[in-house]
Image (cartoon, rainbow, N blue to C red; front, side, top):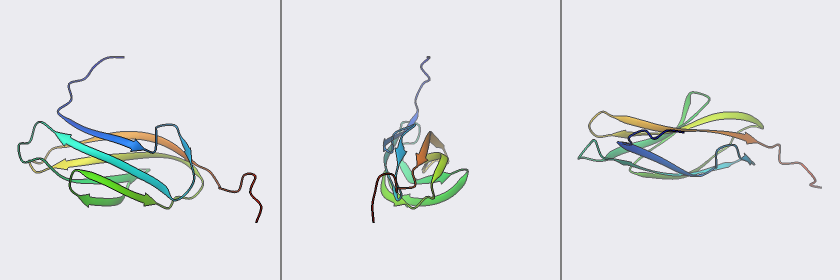
Length: 102
């Protein structure tokens, strides 16, 4: 593993990369930038390359309803200077019926 200089950071605390979750999936993340003195303008969540959610500011805490399956998700930040950075995670959404009776 090697270190890459971080000029902007997107830290995702939920879900965790590789995690199996149930729907709706809770996303919690924060963003910082050192390359733009004006700061982070907005953040967004992509699911399989489709933008599903955006919020203005340096943090997000939301849920997304996803069907059972495996997904590549990305949380991206956009700064006020035109820059952007992202963190990619892979999740599996379970069908939610394992071992449950109704």
